[in-house]
Image 1 (cartoon, rainbow, N blue to C red):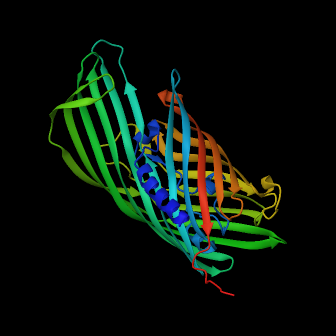
Image 2: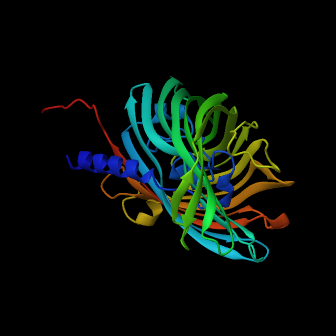
Image 3: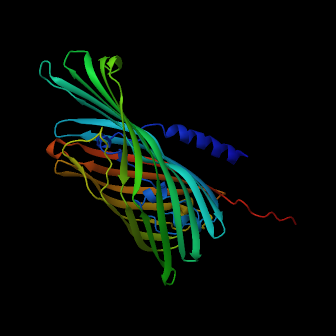
Length: 416
């Protein structure tokens, strides 16, 4: 009963948390926002590596993995991120605390099913551009919201070493972009507010394969394919004359009639594959690669000159080590130690500068005494963007925490 109460409480907490801004990046201004990592903390701590058929931990990134689970699993994770934003001449700091995912998985023999909720993209920026000239033009830009993903996954065991799977995802959310333009020392300006309501379905297909190559050493591999999909965007634009104060709180004076345009955005197809070697429940090392074509993720109200969107690619190297998972003493020997390196080409090009993301990850899987559940802690340090040509470089540090609660459901009771 207590477990059910905890699950229900976490579920409602999660729904409220998804309404919070998940980004503090000025680069979330472009397209449909900053892309979020869409996996669980165990994979994130290895920079995205997700090739092992794990019987205890949910792998959100590959739906085939649900066929390998042996226990009913509930997992929830979130993070705190501190970011230093800097240009050639200035620097600022920003912080955010967000929920990363909520998921449940049920093993049903050869079939495994899972469902959950994940943030897909996040928008969260607050940019001020001021002029030192008398009656100079000033701008204040803000953005909030993002896109979320609700998913249902199904995995199937074809053979002991081969599992396949698919999931269907419903993407939904709202993005608000507001710009206030005014003259210096004049508390009357023009505000333009753009709202985009987004929704659409996406599918994802996955395969995972393992094979013994030497004594207890296994070869692991995984592959996913996401076809192109359409994201419907209903865009509403309102232009108003406003009064504002020093905190940029505005009072509408003369709003013009709103304009509404419907646009179909294209989420491009994506493939992911990875491979590695390791000894089950002891160690593993591998690499993961993701490639995504350029898509059409701008509508009539958020087009920006000198900005283009190219192909996305991600490269990561990671792994884990468990000294001795079944030892009865020396708790530190049962801890799972994870680490990884990543390099991401985001595909966003401003002027001639492509925005890249580089980072290193570290994580610890802490088993809960007397159970098969675990607590996971992750650390990540990275750099996104550049200070070249007047752009912004982000140096970020993330502390992440997740809980994975495992139990045996649907078991037949035996009475002696």
